[in-house]
Amino acid sequence: MAQSGLNFVHLSDIHLVKDFSDVSNYDLDLGLRQAILRDVERMKPAFESIAGVLVSGDIAFAGKLDEYERAIAWLDEICDRAKCDRGLVWCVPGNHDVDQSVQKTYPMLLDSYKALRSSNTLDKDLRDRLDNDVNGPLMFEPLRTYHEHFGAAYDCPTTPKQPWWEDELTLNDGSRLKIRGINSAICSSRDDKEKVALVVVGAMQTIYQPEPDVVYLTLCHHPPDWLVDGEDCEEAMLAHSHVVLFGHKHIHRHRNTNDTVLLSSGAVHPVRTEKEWDPRYYFLSIGIEGDDANRILNVRLFPRVWDKTTREFIADRGTSTDGSILEMIPLPAWKQTAVEAAKQQEVTMPVALNRKRLIHQFMLLPFHTQLGILKKLDLFSDQEMQSKPDTELFINSFAKAKEAGKLESLWEAIEAQGK
Image (cartoon, rainbow, N blue to C red; front, side, top):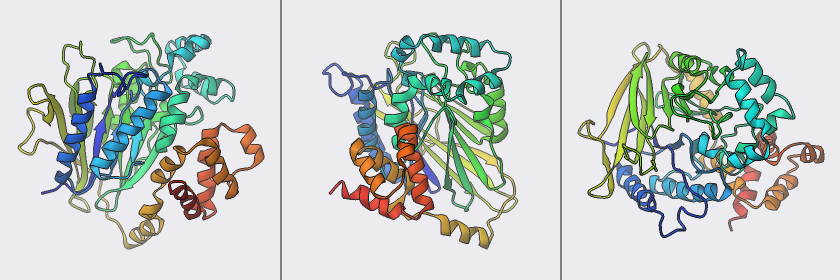
């Protein structure tokens, strides 16, 4: 029986390398990526539909443009095999998405990281740096290529004013799945070391808004033991997030603590010299069972692992007969009213105007074409053009299009570029 609910492909630590991945005859990981494409196609019939792809960081190897262009091309293929729209990808940055050459250009960044790591007033000091119109953009300069050429392409913005993002999908009983993406790479540098917590999240990224009809799924690249403020971060996640997906460690671990499923996903491309070299990825199924006061969140994991003999991905050992692991989490009492159902129906955007798909298509257009479309629809002013970064200008323009009822016209203009 095919899995209903919201089903996702979950990937982490892809590590695509500039001038090597897909272009070198010595790219040994090409076979892994091709095997994942085949496996996604094989697994697709086990799910009624795929809601999208979750990526928990380290898309690139060195934060370079070429690496993100190749990542988008490969994720397009993943979405095609999963039969979901290409724009339905949710992502967060990892340490390999930081361009360390920028940190060499601005050595004062390393001084800022050092000061934050040892600060007794971390949240205040982090806010003072990020919320400053000069220091904030500088702090995010090493992640600029990630943001402008990958994160923004999937409507997963991470900026100095708001390092995290949040999106919302509808679960099978009408309740809401909120996906929160946390940026744990703000202070990541060449100084990062295992067993020494040096990266920072900040409390502002883990302020959840719990409601009876909300299930939270969190994406964060670094696990808590890599974070300076890891204890506070984990406490917030355990209090309010029902599922948390980490990357970084390249080793699969999952546990259910305080009715929160925490998953260290393993890596698509682990380093081949690692002791436990086990390329991995996941399918993740989330759905609600029962109603009213007897609601249960079913979180079903389908871990897929590289088999060295067949050179294909197979179900992990220790899973059930269908290759899955089921975690069941009790939820607060809630029942959707007729008024709520009608309101939800009103705000549901038609598939043809899906926001993420719209933005994805737009962000892949040439820059002059993007500006021409927005200018024609009067979605930005000359003053905004001069004062805002391009990506922020585009994000604001999409918000204006929605407010002005111009989304359909915007979509038609974008679609016309492909004809």
